[in-house]
Amino acid sequence: MARANDEVEALLQEYADLIAITGGDAFKARAYEKAARAIGGHPADVSRLDAEGLRDIPNVGRSIADKVLEYLHTGTVAAVEERRANIPAGVRELIAIPTLGPKKALRLYQDLHISSVNELAAAIEADALHDLKGFGPRTQENILHGITLMQQAGGRIPLHLALETAEEIVSELSGLTGCKRCAYAGSLRRMRETVGDIDVLVAARRSAPFMDALAALPSTAEVIAHGSKKTSIRTGKGVQVDLRVLPPESWGAGLQYFTGSKAHNIRTRTIAVRHGLKLSEYGLFEVESRQSLASRSEEEVYARLGLPWIPPTLREDRGEIQAALRGELPEIVTERDIRGDLHTHTDLTDGLAPLEEMVAAAAERGLAYYAVTDHAPRLYMQRMTDEKILAQRERVRELDGVHHGMRLLHGTELNIGPEGEVDWPDEFLAGFDLCVASLHSHFDLGRKEMTRRLVRACENPYVHVLGHPTTRLIGRRPGVDADWDEVFAVCARAGTALEINAQPDRLDLCDEEILRAKEHGVKFAVDTDAHSVLHLGYLRYGVGTAQRGWLTRDDVINTWPLRSLRRFLSKGGRSRKGAAG
DNA sequence: GCCGTTTTCGGCCCGACTGTTTTCAGTCG
Image (tube, rainbow, N blue to C red; front, side):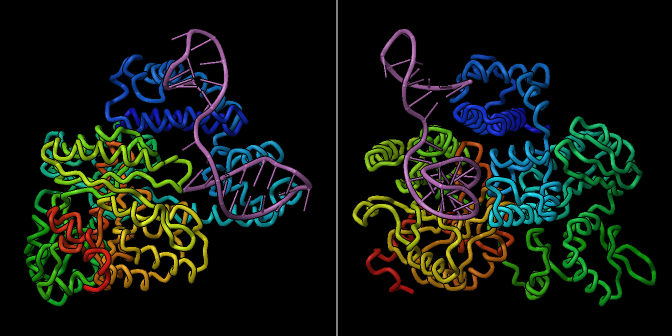
């Protein structure tokens, strides 16, 4: 089951969208948006809260608390249903298209009765928009481009949604009698940034109970196929799940086979053939005698092929087989290796939780150090001032070491201006323990200007980490265009770390860029960019991405002991920056 | 619709960019 908080968040967000589309009070729409975000990021389960408990959540007042209770008791909210009756669901989908907001969506619906993304694309193709006010050629071009972007992600689910769904199902099926093993496989196990469908494997003698259980789960909206070897369902959120039940003795071979990738498996099967063997999802066999040589565990299968066990995040045929044969597989970084988080927010800017709560939650997770990096003034909407951030620093110093001895660093997330300049003069920047610098505007400079801009920011002696370097949003916005090899080289030289932002819609840098950057000798920081306590749990997605980029502990500065990290942050004494090369 | 307080209502995330509008509306971060 999805968390009730997530369902409520989605419902309130929908209501906010519907208010905006129907031209309702913009502040009211924003109030619902804020409440949606607050509930989504609230650590406690809203389905266990009463009216009073709900109203204790910031930005939730009487009206919204009542609606939440109504939803939890009846499954619907009358006010939302009313608005839904007036606006087809497809109209709301339109505002997911970048550059197309509620106003344009309403105009398209009212004037041309367009109520789906496909209808809109067709209308543009047919030049049906030429008389519509506010829809000039550039606007139409931008809309088409936005639709293309959406469709490129098309059908693929973001990693975190897939992982949450998979874990729920694995947990359900693991509890059934006769279940020897249960795990998810496929691209999800390899931690790809998006996932086409979820593969779940069960090792058991009898398959029927598991097939039936999957089909009967409350989250199952549709049964696509229901057989004895394989059952496929689609969840209410549109995620396809394939379940396969294997005999226990085939577990390892099956897990290896269904984890993929296809290219990796072709390699392993080729090695098998070369040994006169055959590798399938049922085991590794001698061709002549058809005798099974290995199948119970992945380790056994790989070992019989003359290979060490290869972590799933490396199984992309990017040289991992060759490295394994040479005995040179990297010891990839794990979540346990991460000692600190170097990019996080509080409610001083756009985070949801106060400093105290973020710090306490981080300490609970066992971190040894933690950097607070709220937004700098030039992200105007955050209204940061010198006074506010200095007051925060005081408080950070007071809290340093208070929770489980966790050490605190006071930092900020600077904005990289069009020329590569950042907020605040050097004297002021010198007061921070750590500065992340990120792009938040001017995403469409030419490659040359963008490269120069990033290079200048990374050469800044007060910038320690380049935050979400490409600034892509998966399925919504491509990364900025720059000569990344040059940027990476500069980062390596200047001692500026590249962030691997763990927010599941960012995962920025991505795996392939990490591999390239690593070639240049860059260091990395795997950060959650947490805006709520729950986001601290996103670390796993960042670590998965780092693994896919073959990173080891040495490559990732926030696996280091604090003393080593501080040495890195001093950037060779700052003035001598770059000299150590 | 929420919040804070100045208990009864005014202010709320501000500014920039884009495209098309001819003076600004819509969208975004």
